[in-house]
Amino acid sequence: MLEGTLKDWKDWYSENRSEEHKVVNDIEEKIHDDLVLVRLWIAQDGKAPKGAIKYQSKVWKNKNSKGTNPAKNLVIITASGQPPLILTNKNSPLVNKSGKVAKGKKNDGNAPTSRYLSKPYQWRCRDCGDQFDSNVAEIHCTRQPRQLSKVSDDSKKWFDKFLNGIEWEFVPHHTISKGQIGVIDNPIADGIAEEAGRELEKILNRVEMKPPEVFELYNYKTRYLRVSDLKDYRKFKQVISKIAEWRKLKIRPIRSAPVGVIEIGHAFDEFLSSNFKNISSDDWSSGERIWFECKELGVTVSGTPDLSFQGIPVETKTLKLFPFEVEDENQQSIFRYKWKTNYCKQVALYLQGCEMDWMLLLLISRESGKFTLVPVNDEAMEKMRADWNEWANNKEHSTKLEEYRKLISEEEVAS
Image (cartoon, rainbow, N blue to C red):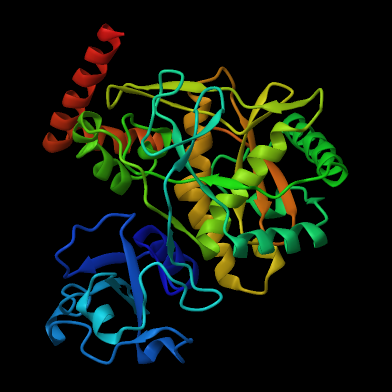
């Protein structure tokens, strides 16, 4: 990967170097998870791939600032005992000087960059699912629509290859989920997970699955706090500081879409969602929207689990491969990190909005087609509630939360 968002790079660093890391920078542009950054190759990174920018100047301002103060125009992800990851923004003189990264183009066959979208843009209604073209975000069914992008030719080829060789295989969860937060030891729940997995394996191998034509573009600018905003402090801070401002602005179309591995991740979610909707089964159905009142922050958020099995909500998460599929000890550490920071929190939040003690987590490999179903409870809530109380006690956040609640109240009165 030569180019990606800050979030992509943090995920990469967690997977390949250390999950305990920090981000420091010396660039003029404000840092946020969706900022697109270009990688700069240093000697510690080994041989630079074709299209990469080599960086041979100083990394830190001086010897005493190592780990805290990077040299000018750099964004650095660093961790104790690990080489730093050196990045810079796309408009940086370090990029322009080299001339090796062209705006909106690919550097090589594997490097993800952005591609520009042309008018009219594609949209999909959040409620009825209708798709339409428009130069602007037109209200549909009283709500702002989601913006779409066509799947690129390279990703279409990836899906063709994937579907030609795939055989879906259910794997019992015990060796995968052992020791993870929220996993319950319950014979009845395990029996349901086993039944669901075996039935889903038959369904997936029986139906003709079609590759996606489009996928949803992620827009961090939102009018409402989302379930995902309550899982991570950095994301909550980014959203709550700007959400009142975003609610007053007209939503502008996103003008570029990712390609490469980033696009495949988004498109794979679309692939699963669209094909799951076509499953004909008495036990399996689409998930229903859930509402959760977060009393600590004084807000209500909503979300929709992907599926339902015999009335039990099922949340789907994809990963490249399961730890047992590769000979890499670091993969188990990466899996634990994702479980702790994402998987168990998502399940715990959904369980607050339904009258159940546990639900199913469906984990699917994007490479092998192996999948598992894990019964998970809301054990993660205790830590999250403690975090929310801490966020609410922050004066700046409490002011922004009050402003957000007022805007929501005014909107409800007007409607």
